[in-house]
Image (cartoon, rainbow, N blue to C red; front, side, top):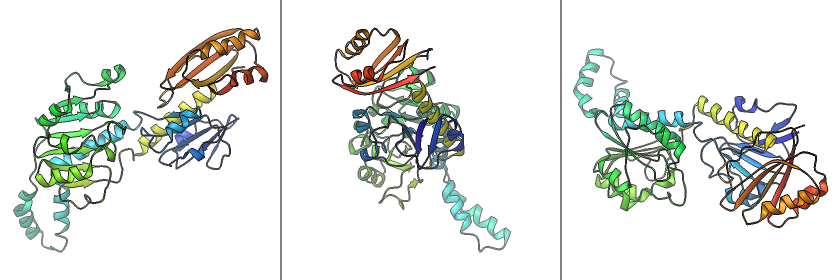
Length: 392
């Protein structure tokens, strides 16, 4: 029986993936094998000795102590792309709100609540509607910073709106590159993108390299009066530098999903309360994806969409499987297979992958290993943990 502890409200569609005969799932589960959460902030103290995996139903993992998890051999999963369409649609909303003063127009009409005469109301509306005149998006340039699951969808939507789309992503994977429309003009540096874009939208993860990416220096390269959209993470934008750019007119408008003091009541700023993934569909998609990844890992040892472990996939066979996590140092696999050879245990199949300081191994055996063998592998210097999985 696997034990999964949940935090936050996880969509029922995800929880239903765990069969009652193999899983104990709930907020009160003690000594869990895995944790499933959304925004709950974990600390190193929450990582019990039995814990082997944490799944975040969302893309960001800034609420999970990833470094401590890696040190303890705990796999951290996220769900890239599961909420991509939800975020894309909110970005499109922001683009339209930035170009057309819909918000101001609605506020003005509401101010006419005391006008009882329809003819008078129509006269006032016709006289004042010029205050809310906007611009069309067609023919304008959209700069997309980050062309992953969300950025590629935003780029496609921009093209569909008739915009010229510029893209920048130095870390673009081969898989992600296939999703980027061929019509997107790839830029080699941000300065060139900023100088040409009428609208800039951010879709990069929050990393040390991206924190403060939009700062006084980068903002000085923006096309004067351009619009900045941030539906990635708040710390990517230096708030003080942005405030100065808004005052000077270098940035014409800022729309983001992260309220911060000092900008909330600015007349050219619109902030939403982190609504990017707040749709029923996105919550279900994230929950199902996170649950399926946990199930596959717990039952077979295979890993996909981990932020701290390598991608590892080995189809189950009729036998016994060891899942071994170790520090990524030379000679480890040889030491493990030597332990097996000394006990005359045949290896059916194995796979060994590494990522940064962590290595992970799946070793399929023809016969059940006894506790003495498992202890012998555990006692190899630099082995972090060992799990025994049976396919019988």
